[in-house]
Amino acid sequence: MDTTAPHFGPPEGERELAAAEDIIAQAFALTPEESRAWRQKVEANSAHLRLLREGGSVAATIILIPMGQWFNGRRVPMVGIGGVGVAPARRGQGSATRLMQAALRELRSQGAPLASLYPSTQPLYRRVGFEQAGSRFEIRVQLSGLDFHERTLSLRPVGESDMPAIHEVYRRHAQRQQGWIDRTVYTWNRVTHPKGEIAYGYLVEGGSGIEGYVYLTRRAQPRSIQQELNLTDLVALTPAAGRRLLSFMGDHRSVATEVMWRGGPADPLLFLLREQTYQVKHLFYWMLRVLDVPAALQARGYPTGLSGALHLEVDDDLFPENRNRFVLEVENGEAEVRPGGDGDVKLHVRALAPLYSGFLSPAALQLAGALAADEDSLRTATALFSGPPPAMPDMY
Ligand SMILES: CC(C)(COP(=O)(O)OP(=O)(O)OC[C@H]1O[C@@H](n2cnc3c(N)ncnc32)[C@H](O)[C@@H]1OP(=O)(O)O)[C@@H](O)C(=O)NCCC(=O)NCCS
Image (cartoon, rainbow, N blue to C red):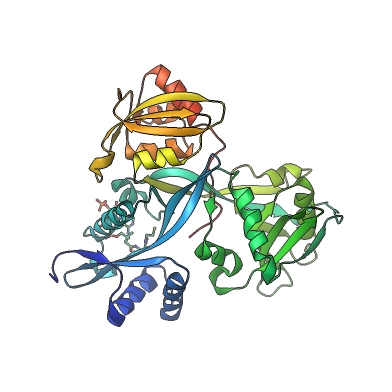
């Protein structure tokens, strides 16, 4: 092997694993033990560690986590990216850029249409075709404002045998949301075992089965009887389940003043509250990369009852296959994509990400100088990509 040329791939041998653990520990301020445990968990949970070798040693790390993401009711295969780290002495010399390019090439060659990530810095990821495409909010509800006393539906701890049903309840809920992920073992592990802790699961049952559930951790506040109540997951399929779960949260009011969970900008559970005794704080805009333009456009759902054709002209610095004209034809919520057409809507693949997810309207993208189109095409694009604001409560 040429030890001077950059080389990207899975770790080979104990020395490379140790080097990767050191990079991850220093990038994310973990102890060596935490870094090792995290690396082992990655592999045990079907995610993939990849390394960039430069000058004969390990320069950078990245984790690839296969999952899916829901857009207008359809699951689009998506690979979540985490663990991007460059050895401190090698930073500022383009290693992360080369790492991202190599990782995206691997994902595209394997047929993944989308990749997404939570950025600690945007220019790095924009340079390789990512753009803001959805949000993640923190929701804090004051328990004193939760005057719910709903006990009709039964509530009990989640048992091991309930897990398939819990997964199904999550899936039924997530597929109706825009941008929520289809979880795999890696992301479920973050719900049930967040940062090595164990979250307590409780489910709500009605006549026709499980209607909702919650996972929570409690952390004692220093020198106080008070606890921090943190929900790692919260799903209510029915208003009755929502009221039962809000009552359950209120049952913690002797030792906690508020409860916190993550979600989108307008959580329907908050609509049940009498007053605005909550705060919704923006945490992050996640970024999306359209790796395969026709495959991604074809895989997502579109509003039913609409039909229309959009002629796109896409630019992409990394993948010449995407640098093309495409015709997107939609009928009855389904799309067909073929190369060619008039190229009426001109945009870089980066701008396609917020259009695709519905994060920014075509008019907003035009205002930002990221899209050029005639009025008719703008109207068609607005209708085809309309939907609720995309959000992703999960972090990975
Ligand atoms: C962020 C990080 C991965 C960048 O690695 P790198 O090899 O230095 O990056 P590159 O040299 O390829 O730089 C690419 C671009 O990223 C941005 N960037 C690089 N380092 C950055 C930093 N420390 N802070 C903010 N932006 C940074 C710059 O815009 C840079 O382009 P420019 O130099 O032309 O302005 C590296 O500093 C690191 O490991 N940091 C700690 C962990 C981390 O933040 N990981 C990312 C998690 S999403």
